[in-house]
Image 1: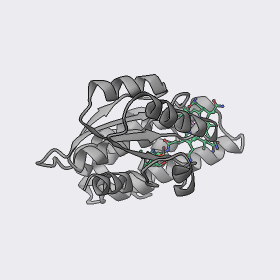
Image 2: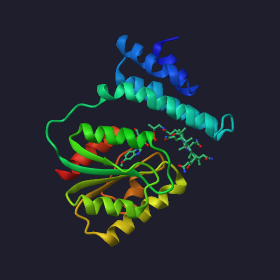
Image 3: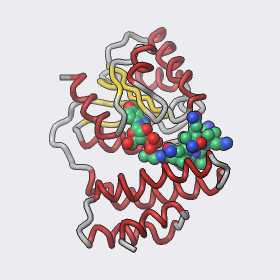
Image 4: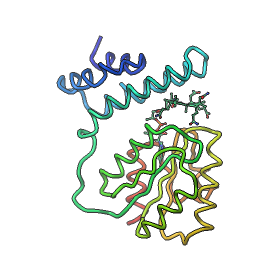
Amino acid sequence: MSKLEEVAQAVEGGKLKIVAGLVEEALAEGVDPLIILNEGMIGTMGIVGNKFRDGEIFVPEMLIAAKAMKKGVEVLKPRLSSQAGTSLGKCIIGSVAGDMHDIGKNLVAMMIESAGFEVIDLGVDVAPETFVEALKQNPDTKILALSALLTTTMPAMKTAIEVIEASIPREFKIIVGGAPITQEYADQIGADGYAPDAGGAAVVAKKLIA
Ligand code: B1M
């Protein structure tokens, strides 16, 4: 079995204690960090999600796999992110109200930070009022980034934009993303940008402030 397959198996099996070591071994063997992330981890979470959908595993197994992936991402982080020299301004990010998923959001935050933004991460299950408060405290914010992973929390993204627009002048750009989000939905709820993945989010954020 290749090191990459071992990483994937450890993530899927939620082997918290060995994932970081396996990722380090894969890196030492010269495996590209992006391949470890995309094939060893993100792809594996897709398999985990499908098994959950099909009733083969349950929430605890899904949670432990997510924790295992986070251990691996910690090792990859310095290899994936580069310290950009200039600051492009502030980006406030969070998973919308009701949504506890944060792995994708954290990757987006990491890539946006690498692109040169100062990231303020409000975490998960962020109420619209919390976004408003953070925007008021940081009036120089350039980008607001909203993540949602559930079809049931997509409406919370729309509500967040509505509440924010009703509360403060929109002097920043809003980007949205997450597995169920599409360009069409982004347009429908009045977002300025959409990206299907973390790298794309950083590209869109930079483009919007250019
Ligand atoms: Co949940 N979950 N989950 N879950 N979970 C999904 C999303 C699901 C698809 C699994 C399935 O059924 N196949 C399903 C949603 C179905 C739907 O809505 N259509 C689901 C469900 C149903 C649930 C619960 C309701 C289960 C329950 O309790 N019965 C529950 C809801 C909790 C809540 O949020 N209120 C729940 C809970 C959980 C855990 C807590 C156990 C855990 C999350 C742990 C954590 O994040 N800390 C979990 C996990 C791990 C998953 C899966 C397996 C993996 C998610 C993940 O981390 N993927 C997921 C299945 C799947 O994704 N295939 C699933 C890896 C990550 C890198 O990808 O997050 O998609 P992703 O992020 C990508 C892109 O989406 C994009 O870039 C990222 C990187 O490239 N992106 C953006 C994300 N945000 C962006 C923002 C942007 C731009 C791009 O701009 C701002």
